[in-house]
Length: 201
Image 1 (cartoon, helix red, strand yellow):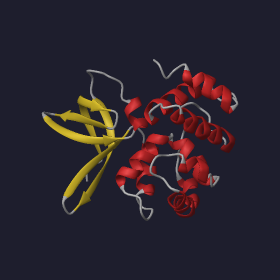
Image 2 (spheres, helix red, strand yellow):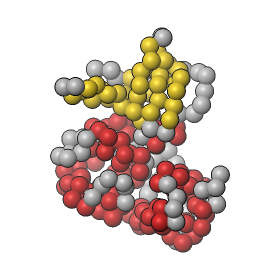
Image 3 (cartoon, helix red, strand yellow):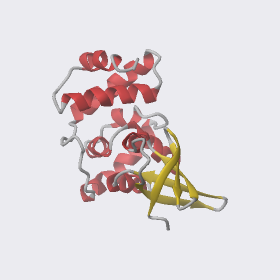
Image 4 (cartoon, helix red, strand yellow):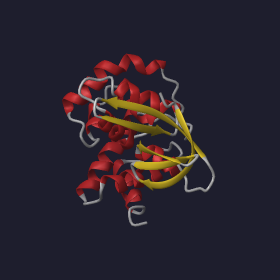
């Protein structure tokens, strides 16, 4: 199994990169969360990988952190969740946010992610809640969001999308605001107002 790749990124899109490793190009599917951490650079990068094998297809999925890869593997162990859906879930929130949502049983937050219905969210909570404590997840911002913060984030995301902004832009704007706050609390309305300032950039 391919555990990681080290090389230069020669092509990138929000959900896919091609890594040149000694002249061989590896196409790697990545989440928005990982994509944002892979800065444009001429230097070599190291990306953790998971090789998904089917009878007719082999696909590489890449991760910036061990925590994200561990969560990906747990998600695809849930009935009805394939690697593409797991990639989408990890694009919707950080590993720390996802763990908090699962541990607290926050179905509203999980169903705010595109493609995740209520039954799927309930299965995720039922099958993974007791496994979350075994994961060593460190939030790079130094704080783990509370259930109330996740609920506000979810409501702000829905509001921005209802205003016509694509999910990727809305999520990035909200994440930018939250990073600026360093854990300080905001009302949903304030979060939306601040996020709107980042959607035009």
